[in-house]
Length: 198
Image 1 (cartoon, helix red, strand yellow):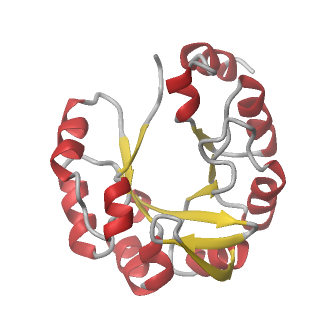
Image 2: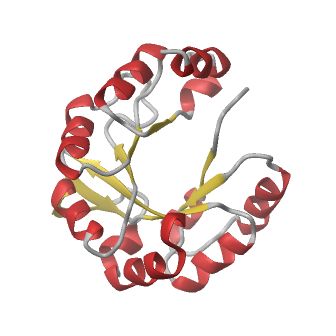
């Protein structure tokens, strides 16, 4: 339908801390003609190398970025543009371990500390909005974009073409759409066509 990239999350991996669905991920990556990014359960440099060798274009570090900043630094040094840090936030505070564990880390401050380690791109997910089909947390996303001045991909609550247009207007580099595709709330082909010509 024209998607420029596929976003994959190993939910089991996010909870267990290790790549749980690697064979399926490998099959998806080898069957795609477009790049794919993967998050969930990538907690050491060996896992980063493993998924990149399997054909994944970008790895997303979330919990590992919070708990092991040295990994982020090493990954950025070795793989540069292939590293994204996922900022999963609840009321502006970062959450880890498949969203089950809260922290007192402010999302913007945390992202700033990651930029110092070489991170060049973030995915921002508002946990309260994810999977709800309500709307993205535009205020928080705008805050991330304005404060960081670095590519931000928005995630969580996106369910309409209007939401995507608003995110583009705010300056988001991209958006991750999941549930809205499964429910049919968003026509991906139409959305991409309209956004390309907006």
